[in-house]
Length: 318
Image 1: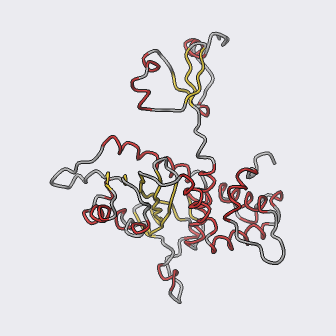
Image 2: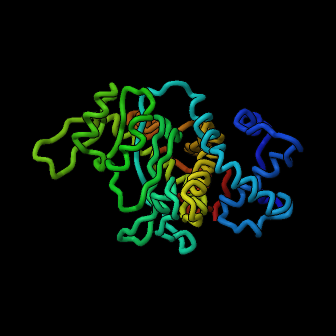
């Protein structure tokens, strides 16, 4: 099958330091098994429906379950994120993830421990949901994840990862994190909050509006994660297993996050490949001289004579 996912040799070299050591018999090919796990999580398949090119489905599930319990996928994500060095700006936000019927068991297992918190699924206006809290760097690469039930507010859930925040100068968040105790906790850690005040506040809160505009990168990260069907919809009852699926999606996204998608600027016969920069675009002569932005995945065939003129002189008219 030509649409199967396979990790490249370069990506495997970056992931090998986080693999657990093999004891006794050597493991099955790591590249084949990991590629199969990623393919299952990305497409939302059942384990028994795995393509035969990845090997027996039981092998894929056993590796997935065993490495998930060991925290291997979380270490991969955190290790790749730490390669960028210390970050001066971090961002925090949360999103809802829909819980499927197979995962919507609200009862906690007997015996205490992690199961005493239940399945981390709560009832909201949209039904049963899980809330995923994320801490990212300035580029939107995920640094840490934390899950709560769906009805937990943003600033209440932020109390858990507060102690493990990386040393940064600024923290960017939306109005959902506007709480006096949260601002004081950030100041005690030497972090400057860039958080707009709630509309219900009697006195307006001053914040850096220009810096706050960069917060869209964490929203883009959530959108990339929700392209994975086993992340957008929670099928796993175990919260730790589901968090491993989120970490594996973030790992694959981080492996390819260094390559920005080029934006094609076209004007008559000229074609330039540039990385998008909104600040430079506002004052650049490109905007004033008739350039059009065409994303590679959004191109459509020309239907009018004016479109043929914009796409080049060599385009055939109707």
